[in-house]
Amino acid sequence: MIDYVATVRRGWQNAIAHIDFPLLLITLAIMGLGLLTVNSATIDSTHRMLSQASNMGVALLIMWLVSRIPPQKLMNFAIPLYVLGLVLLVAVFLFGVKVNGARRWLSIGFTRIQPSEIMKIAMPLMLAWYFQKYEATLRAKHYAIAALLLLVPFGLVAKQPDLGTALLIGGAGFFVIFFAGLPWKVIIGMIAAGVSAAPFLWTMLHDYQKKRILTLLDPTTDPLGSGYHIIQATIAIGSGGAVGKGYLNGTQTHLEFIPEKHTDFIFAVYSEEWGLLGNTLLVVLYTLLIGRGLMIASAASTLFSRLLAGAITLGFFTYAFINMGMVSGILPVVGVPLPFMSYGGTALVTLFLGIGMLMSIHTHRMLVKK
Image (cartoon, rainbow, N blue to C red; front, side):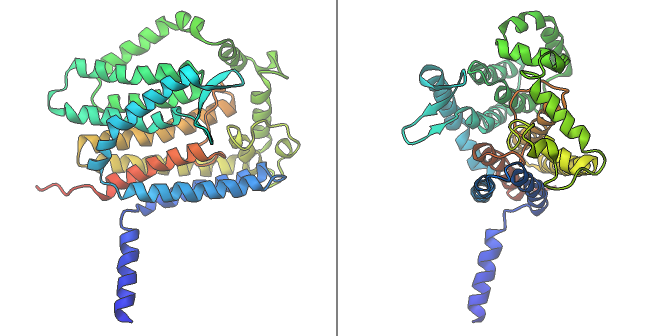
């Protein structure tokens, strides 16, 4: 009996050995708020909440599996995953399924996949591997090659068009290059060049993208069209007041004024019901998540681990900042979900892949001999 108990204890300890509990608890807290909000947003269709709960279970399992893979082995996936992502993106460009004017999906018979999701993980993995490989001999040419590795998939995704996902991929890649030591003078030069090229870049945007930017400046120019999302979302956020209208009591939500209320605009639903107090809690949780991720990055023992952890962590920040910004009316609507809150299985799995990698980096870090 004693041997059996000891065996069970060892098995349990081995199962949780690679779990970083501060990171997990913060993520579960955000996810719990998300599940409550999805339930409120889809109160007449409870299968969505059950489906999201199922998605969370699958995502947690994937997180646990990835957390057990040492960073040295994660490096082995960098090139194959990046090449696979590029091949699939080219396949989407040539043979992809077109829905609502966007060619973002690839049909594989029994289902459809969105290859751009792969690049959210493949990009920081690839660039972190690249800088690890040339750590001792980094030169300007290496940063130029890294930029090229980033721009090719960024361009393919933006061409679909899917500006939101392209920004997330671009952000993940840029954070790796930045943490690898990109000089500030180069960054300032890039910003200046971007501002100078703004008129040219404007001509390259699709009509709907131009309309979103113009609508951001004045949503009332098309209140029943392109400005509808922003107007209704800001009404919901403002009507929440200091403490909100209460759970399941959001009028904008339940009178069907908020579009895409369980996906991209879930923050408006949450804000209306929980108000400024709830928003403060959510921002604190995201801040703790980002802080914990940066702590893991700073304690990592290799350049690959530091770059990967830093890029994944700031990727969470990019997700949250863009989503909250577009729902609040300070950024254009680009279709980015709120991390760990919005309904959706693919995005949730991608996010938990990142969490699993952070846990792997933290629990497999090597002790540095002094």
